[in-house]
Amino acid sequence: MRIFIALALPGKFVRETAAVARKLGAAVQGRVLAPDTYHATLAFLGEIDEAGVQSAMDALDRACAGAVPVSLHAEGLGKFGRADDATLWLGLAQHPDLVRLACRVREELAAAGLAFDEKPFKAHVTLMRRARLPEERTFELPFPEDALSRKVVLVKSELSQEGATYKPLYEVDLDRTATDAGNPGMPAGVAGEAMLDRMNESHADFTNWALDFLALRPGMVVLDAGCGGGATLARLDARCGGGSRIIGIDYSPVSVAKSREFNHEALRAGRVSVQQASVDALPFEDATIDAAVSVESLYFWPSAEDALKEILRVLKPGGRVLIVMEIHESADLPESVRENIRAYNLFVPTLPEMEQLLCDAGAEEVVVHTRPGLTWFAAEGVKGL
Image (cartoon, rainbow, N blue to C red):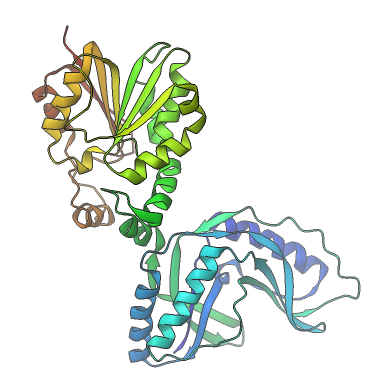
């Protein structure tokens, strides 16, 4: 089998790259490649047998351990070959994560005794073959917007008179490898910092949806229990306005540092503070908090009931607690989600269980909000007067 290892390209990046190729094809004679062939090769192995394919899969797993999604930035056109028979490609910036991943892939292949093309690595996406370049070669082309590649794929290449066709044989999810290395329950190290950066982005939509259920106002004291990368603290600060105090706690030192960094201006102004603490032992006096929020944190609490009781303890009478999660237990959860639940030992309640947890903790007026068509929920309760 003819094999190579490549970055898979996200759909929007592929579509925008295809637009570049079409414009190029209108100006240059040659064969424009189909968008479903686009990829960025990390290593070309050539012909190997089935045993070699398995060795390549194992090498790919080792190479991607701890790897993070890779930034894609188009930086210009290039060519291989003669001007009258050229292969034209879209070059990708040599981002450190990309170069590091390519080096690790090649190192692991070499360690496994697998031969590969050792030409210097230059990330690119092939757009045209058999191109005949005109003497005047200035092209005004709209390059694709920056994107992230989230998968590395082992690909089988089959050649025919019509060109090559590609069949993925194996893939590694870089979101998963990055999360494994970062430890979502207790973010640590550089991988933990990168994971928190991704969470700050990926949690935005459902966090903003959920915060709409809280009647936030100036002058409030609001707690973010499990503040992670700090984005929720910033959203609370923006929504509450003047005279408010937003307090974040997290038991991961990396999360505390990341939250402080993310909110450095608000920290200097005294509107936001962050400290290391556990949700089941909050360092606050009774009845000192107006509202408490926790986003995607309950999964990891040693005892959800004890932690919720502790949050209710520090709330003022009439104060509200809001628990925000992207998933809840239900019969139609995809198997990929269930794999994550098992892998990270997550506590994922059903909606009735979440409601009962808040009631057992002492909350009143408990309501569990859901978003139609999605697994999001926001469970809120009120501390009695």
